[in-house]
Length: 204
Image (cartoon, rainbow, N blue to C red; front, top):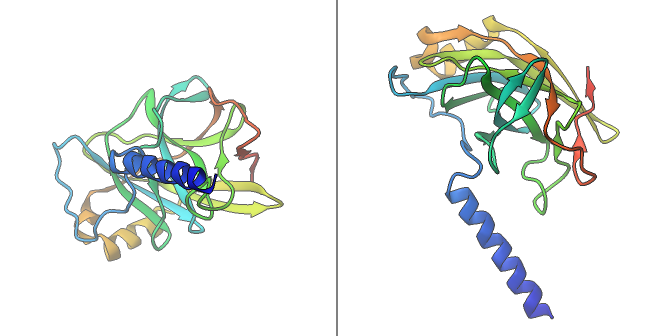
């Protein structure tokens, strides 16, 4: 029986490694500090303030009026921690009706067997949504999270001056290209609120 359990665990871990190596979790680290932005290569750069240092999933989706529908496959476009208060990553452009949203958050890192609660925006809950026009370095805003009584609260804001100062200091090659976008709160659709997932229920 012990051998069987060990075999199942090993298969499970191998499956996780295969998914990670095949890009199932998308971008998993911030850009190198010396990155130079080159236009015309079909990518944009997202700059977003995240507090505290929670791992966030950036997922693909589309607008459905006042609602937002997750349209990604298993995994996320990005699964990354902020460094010094910001996430700075390279993503494919999505704008207009097609955009990005932060649908799930893991305060203690990876979910499941790895650690802690996995908070997720499900049907009827609000999700921060933003777009990335092509060939741009875009600061979309800040999101501040707080956990209280096993509930995740968040609020969004803008501080373009602070973002400019951060980029100038940490990513000098991106400084001249930084533009300002925005975060819009949309009601989630297409993701049932399952008992195994702790939903994001409050906006501060």
